[in-house]
Image (cartoon, rainbow over all chains, first blue to last red; front, side, top):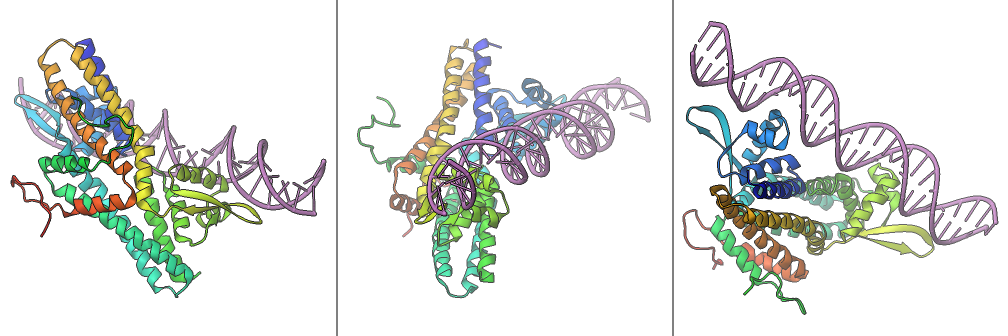
Length: 187
Length: 187
DNA sequence: TAAAAGATTTAGTACGTTTTAAATGTATTA
DNA sequence: TAATACATTTAAAACGTACTAAATCTTTTA
C-alpha cells in the first residue's frame, strides 16, 4: 500500500480507538471500525485480525458489538465462504442508533431510580431535610426530562433533519468578544 | 434518619453511581456526589467515607476529580479544622463544565488525528482507494465540526439560555420517515 | 515545642475487563 | 461421507483501574 495511505490509516485507527474508548466501547472495537472505514471494500474477519494484531476470536466478539450498534454490516461474496464486514458510514445514523440502544436504556434506569427516590422522600416525615431533598430532586428530574426529550427528538430525526437542526442550533452561538471568528467557514 | 429518607437516599446513590460509571467517571465518584446532593448541609470527608464504606484516601482522591469538574466545592466551618464538601446543584452548569473539561479536549485530540489522516491521504498517489478514503474522511470531518460547534454553543450558554434552547429543540416535531420537510414548532 | 486531628500520598492488592489460545461448531466441497 | 475452511465459544491469562491500609504531610491546639 502507498506509504502515505498507510500512515493515514494509522492516524485514523488511533482517532477511532481513542473515541471508542472514551465512549465506553473499548479501544479495539473502535480500531476495528476504523479498519473498515478506511477500506473501500468489505474486509474479512481474518484480515481485520491480522491488521490489528489481535486474534480472530477477539474480532468475532468485538465486531458483534459494532453490529448490534448498527455501526457495521456483514456481507458475503459469491464463491467465498468467508464473512466480510463493511462500515455504516452515516454518522448521524450511528448517533441515533447508539443513543437509542446504549444511552437511552441506561438513562431510563437512572431516571426510574430517581423517581423511586422521590416517591420515598415524599413518604418521609416533614422536615427541613425532606424539604431540601425534594427541592433538589425536582431540579434533577426537570433536567432529566429535558435530556430525555432531546434524546427522543434526535432519535426520531433522520440524518438530514439532524443536520439541519444542528446547523440551526449552531446559529444560536453567542459571538464571543475578541474572538477571531470561531468555528465559521473561512472565506 | 427517617427510614424513608434513608431508602430514598440509597436509590439516589444507586442512580448517580450508575450514571457516573456510564460516563466514565467511576461509580464511587458518582455515589459520593449523591451523598452530598442528598445532604442539606456540607458533609465532611470522613462522613462520606463512613456512609459509603470506603476509605478516606479513596474519598480524598475521588472528591478531587469531582472538584476539578466543578461538581463539588469545599467549604469550612469556624472552629472546625475539617474540610466539608457541598455539591454544585446546577446541572446545566455541570454539563457545561464537564463538556469543556472532559469531552472537548478528548474531542480535539481525535479531530487532530483525523486532520492528520486527511493530510497524509492527500499526499498519497491518486487511486481508487485514496478517493474513497478522502470522501469518507470529509464526511467524518463535517460531522466532527458540527459536534464541535454544538459543544461550543452549549459551553458558552448560561443555564437559562441552555434551558431555553433545549425547550426550543424539544419543540421540533418529529417528522415521519420519507417526509421531506424539517420539523416545525407545534401550534 | 509536642501532641493531636485531620487530609493526602503511596505502594500494594483486589477486581473486572479485555485478550488470547484452543476447542468446538457449522457449513461447504470433493 | 470425510476433509476443509472458516466462525464462534470457552476457559484461562494478562492487563488496567479502583480501592485499601499505612505512612506522611499539614495545620492547629495545649
